[in-house]
Image (cartoon, rainbow, N blue to C red):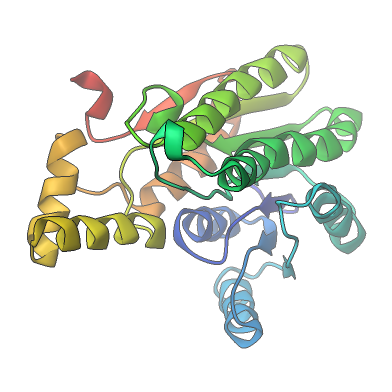
Length: 260
């Protein structure tokens, strides 16, 4: 489906981003992955994905908190592959604190990576997508782009911003072959969420399984985590011809969270 296409996936050395990168490679796309990690581990990961799917896989260590790096990521992909057909904005961070105790530097960091970087990479990638009249922009927002939770003001604000930005880009590209959509996961067992489980276990003196069940039970009626593989399959569908008229949509993958 994506043979000869090029996909850039931010925050893709682990978790959701890696699940999406693997799914796009399985569909035939060459990849530019991005994120943090040990050089040897990342090089091994590149080789594994390339060998498994017969695609080229490059890596950028761009720090998306820096505007020049965010724009430079797309420029790097253009130099490496000559084009960017699919852009998945996945990189994100979290900080938990009440508004009146929220450190300004953490607010700025969350907004920079979760929202501003999405604008910067999209702005850099769009011109050559428009020139070819084809492109897929997929923004990994969150169920917190649609509803809120306490002590997550920066994250909620950034993800609501991503959903709004997605709609704006969809309208601006509506008469072209480009679509822009947001995926809004609920709980996904990533390192970020594991930290919340560990904190809950420590706070309430629970064992890990009890903390896991309590975390899911508070929000996600399915009592199961969404998986990176499920999100990867959805991203691949959004890149397909069947999704050509699907644009400007925020798609919850939340085990019934929003149905409450």
